[in-house]
Image 1 (cartoon, rainbow, N blue to C red):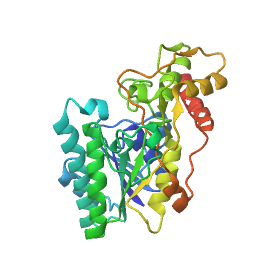
Image 2: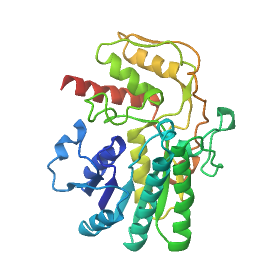
Image 3: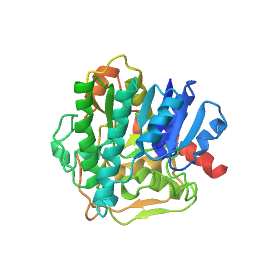
Image 4: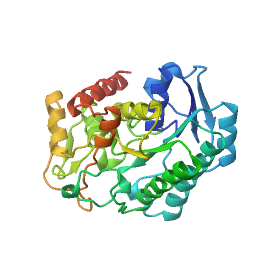
Length: 326
């Protein structure tokens, strides 16, 4: 396969490039800037890994790239922002991702791309509280900010291209991704892409304690958060990309369960007994509890299941420790 990955320098995009390069595919990383995490170093000079500088809102460069490299598949991971950051800039937060998705759908239609995967988000569902979950793919969208609204719009538009133009496109909806490559970027090994505050408790805790610093949070331990280990997301994406036919236009890929931040901390205390981790009770001010997603569609069709969270954290600790040692 010749795969175009938008946002290929980002946390998820770099993981996608790595996973498919290992299988011998040609990967075109399309992004405004070039940077790679530690796990990609062995492929930096690989002839099957190509970086193209380009904007996802530029259809001409996108189309030229697809033609030049005979692209067969597209994985659209590029994203502009998150719910909180989208609120002060509604125009950019809506127009950029929606137009980028439309450009890619048009390219998929014009050039007969074999399959286009667009990464969606739990934010499209918005305000469902935990007692109303788990949320299946067909739950009504109730976004609370412009980022979630843009994802909801794309998830509405994409099936229409399937129905009216026979475009093989699919939305993969996920949430709170963590894992190798998170935090690696322009701000150094712990402060770059993928580091997004309170929605990344595992990364936040490990980035402190593995450097010998205590992690102390006065409150927030009762906040329940659904996370997705990046390697499990990749496994689900591979199942979807390689399937002969897809029954649906959207699949949820996540852990499928809410876990309190205090429980994440407990897991890490068990694994790293010498580390100081202290998290007080309560829920952060201004943050709403949200229902988890239902992964039963992907499980029924592809056999997808998320790995045990403790196993995922152990794997992430090993990677994080390698970065520190290097």
